[in-house]
Image (tube, rainbow, N blue to C red):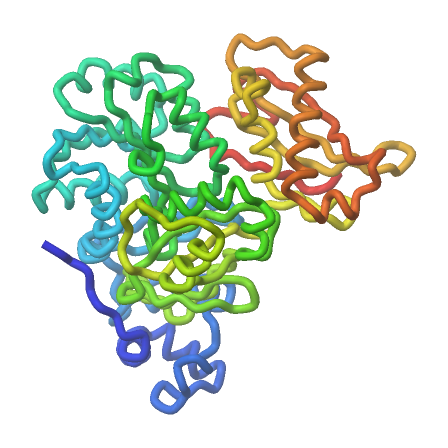
Length: 456
């Protein structure tokens, strides 16, 4: 049974203008007429200009807060509160259903292990509820929610997995890698992975699938593009993954399509549920939620590509995709620019560094977590410093530090033309620091990892 609601953005705008006190006040403050201003001339809403400016009840229909409140991760500052309802979950569950249909969970007994943080944070309980909605729709899913307790995850899976045809882990990419690295026996569980929250490379996907015994990364993994503000906005499909893997091996081609040296997350989205627009290289969306959002500027860098245009582009460069996917448009998402560092005028992205650590000569010695910084020495020369978390039991050695520096530099030069052109060659080799697992200064356990630090 489908729960998707077809949303006409203009109709939703009129409804929100009539029923949401904060949005009426926002329009008045910007001199916009709820009935006379064309939709695409409406002022953009943001956290600072809208959701943080008005009282929480006034942001909801009729000034009434919904039946549940989630809290954002606070990765961009102070935590924000987001009312939710069961109706929101049912709509978002459609995105999960596209993924689990690929996993054939209607016919396969499926253990869904929710490894997102539980409690007030948006990820865990929302994911758990969406997965349970799928069970109500006829998917053969049983859910368990150990959250981010790695010991509990590894304790419950071995005795439960033999009762199921497959096990699906749902969580943040670096955390799922930690779980897989710490566990064993994964090939016997017919593992699938659902990730969210971070962009990762195709080298990362290949590496983790090899360690987990996953033979088909295209049909056994999926990343969700979601936000605390509005739930899941889009999801990877086998089609988008096949396209992304093709582009990953051709960085010049990817750059011509996306306009950046880094590879974005590539998802498909239902335009009848979330209406997207591009605005100066960033994404704007309109959608119905516990807090309805009209032309909401989420500040994620990215863009949109129509379905036909994407397939035409792929075919013109030698790829006729064989993997299935809906006839929905594509959104590509780089994330937010404040997760980069600027070095000699070149933007250095976490994705560029991650690929260097995912090469075979390095990957077995590190967890994949790192922190980028630009430091100034006593002579006022600047250096790109990378602090890297070692795998448990791996000692820091000069040879490993040198290998990491070489691998990162190779990938930076391959992927980031700005880096190669702007940074003087004597200053291109990064300064590497190796730290033990769970180093309290750089990699404290139980917190959301941050890949950058402001300049010192």
